[in-house]
Image 1 (tube, rainbow, N blue to C red):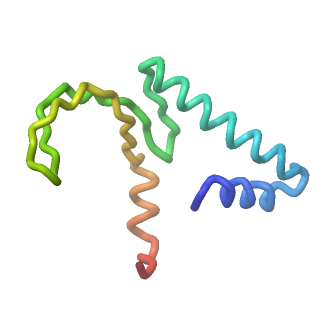
Image 2 (cartoon, helix red, strand yellow):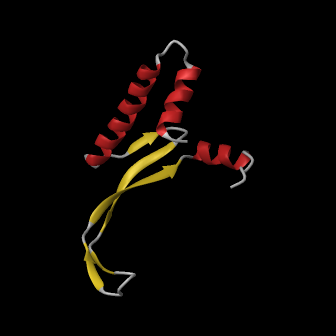
Length: 98
């Protein structure tokens, strides 16, 4: 599911909301999560999961095309850990064909 599909589902579920209002809600939630992670905070949504950040140290990598060693700078990456309720629901659901 992509963001526009999520907005459409929310608008269908809540017919009193205009599509632009549903889009504003989704954008606001995603923006708040992004800002919290940028501050170094952890975001936990009960029953869904938790977003946090993880620091990756600088290292020496390898260019797969040439085999040359290249420096890779340190970076911060977002991490998501599914909550218990989500894991239980996913394990009860039938697996879709891929």
